Structure formats: C-alpha cells, structure tokens
Figure 1 (spheres, rainbow, N blue to C red):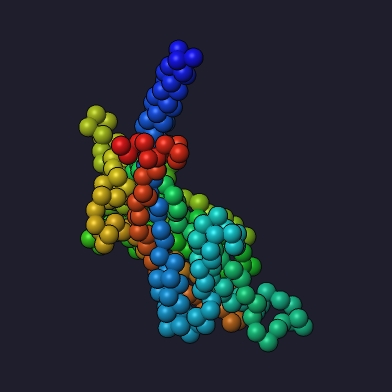
Figure 2 (cartoon, helix red, strand yellow):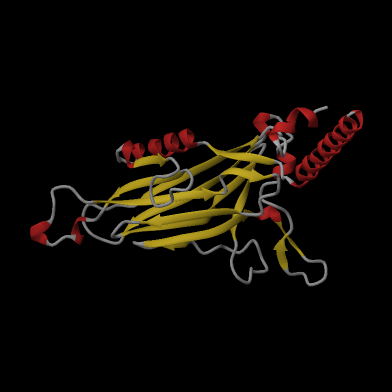
Length: 266
C-alpha cells in the first residue's frame, strides 16, 4: 500500500513538472502585445471645427466605431458632403443637394505584436456620386514622440531615386476604393552596394516606444485631403487636415496557461 502511494506521488510530481515546462515553453513562444489606440474624439473634434469654419455643418464629420460603415473593422472617419445639384434632371432637382459619404481610415489599430510598424496603411472609400477625394502626400506629415514632423512618403512600385522630387497626389473618384502604405522620409536610405533607395527603418518603432513614458508613446499621421466636386451648382471644394493620432498602450503580461499563472510567478 505504501509502495502504491509512493508511485502515485512520484507520478503526480512528474506530471506537474511536465505541465510546468509546457507552460514555460508556450510562454516563450507567445508574442508580447500592445494596443494601438486611435484618438477618435480628437479626430472628430478637429475635423468638425474645420468644417464649421468653411461653412458646413459640424455633423458632416463623424467617427465610426468598429462594426459601422464600409471600413467597419476598426475606427474610421465618415465625411458626409453635399453633391452638386446638376447631377439630377432639371425636373427632379431637390431644394437641397444630395449628400455622399466618404470614409477614411488609418491602420494598424487595436492589438498589435511587440514588433515595429514598417508602414501606415491609408484606406479611403468614396461613396459619393460626383466628388473627388484628393490626398496630398507632400503636404501631409508624420510625427512621433516629440511631435517633430516628417514628410509623408507613399510606397510606390519602383521607388524613385530622389526623395526631394514632388509626389503625385492620389485621386479617389466616386465609387472607388484606395488602400496604400505610407512612411516618413527619414525611414529611407540608400543601399551601400547598389545605391538604390529603400526603407531602412520602421515608421513606428513599437518595441522602443512601448518602454517610454505615456506622453512619449504617441505618433500621428496628419493627412491633407481635398474634396472637390466635378461640376454643378451647389458644390465647392473642401480642404481638410485629418489628424489621425495614436497612443501605444502596453498590455499586461499573461501566462500561457492561466491556471498555472501563480506557479509561473514563483
């Protein structure tokens, strides 16, 4: 009887040790994560203020939470703009112009591995009938930590050899969708061998910034956008600066197997 008890004791000790080692092994493979939190309230307030100064209703700008709108997976900005009256037949023209919707989003957002972000993805959906969305890359800027700005560089096939050359603006026509990646000009360098221009640094060094104090864990993309009607009465261009600002929030470390969380802290 005593021998059976001893065997069971040794067996459970061995099983416990195996589970403990498995937990440590899985823990090593798990990636620490952070959360990239957009400043939705600041974005909405800034854009509404610009619209009011240009004679438009502040309700023309609204920040949509995840699950709403054409870019519903994460937070996005929705702009509701007047359509030119000439789009309708003369007998059918309403007293007020129709309105079209434009959605703008900057990624990544939400949980993110503790890895550098090589580029910010700008997505635009134009659901208007006669309004062009023009993104001016040369007048846009990226800032990190100390708010020191850098010019935005859009990734294009066969990158040019001179960053000082003007960039072509991106135009999103009605019922079109744009998804493009941008970085800042200080992220690029030349290969020592071929002298070819290539990205040499991330646009957001998440591992480095995650260890800084709260006020320094911020970065932003200030996107200059012009909304231009093709033609017609009742339409006029709108110039906006869209301040997409983000904070990096570290997540608390979690054990691979919650049951042994107490054991792992010993």
